[in-house]
Length: 114
Length: 111
Image (cartoon, rainbow over all chains, first blue to last red; front, side, top):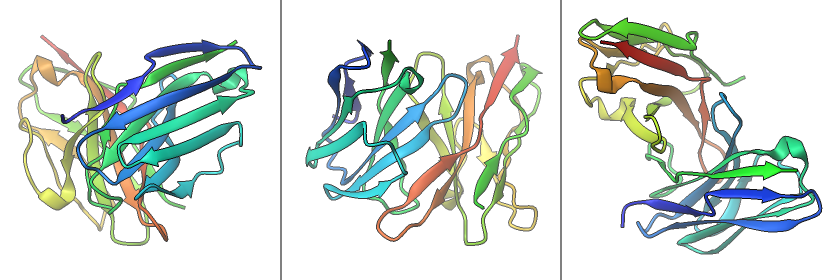
């Protein structure tokens, strides 16, 4: 399996809801990433996990809570989001977090916050 | 500050014409640069990286440290090249590297 999968494809939630985004890869990669992409903008890094440890948090608000239960899974827990958090959330993985490594991206979860 | 600049939001060329997508970067260290591409209804994927010095789908990109550029070139455009192209710079940090993307250039190939 050489793909990064993300579920759900679409998510609509209210500002008081709690939901989770899931990401999975079975390529043996040890680095995983969450990005946020607004319409007509490039992806912006949110979090980096390296060997299941949170290595980079790009000053993301605490209403976004990442979790890496094992080397194949990455979750993003959402709570009390704002309408401006509506975006495409991309997961990616790479062999490890060395600079020259290719990142493999998932198809994304399109999130709408009402 | 580290930055990646793609000056063209949209580039439209005729099939068979040469293509050049511009990318300039701002980074004081040794750069690790990539071109990522997103075709319609497909996921973002790597096109090429400067460390590999390879040609993918007829595209090449040469790192010019003097001009701090990493322009993407193809001598003869094909209709299937129409896509969104992002130039990206990988930065080191204490525990992991991270990528910053340019704003992207949408390439449209006219038949």
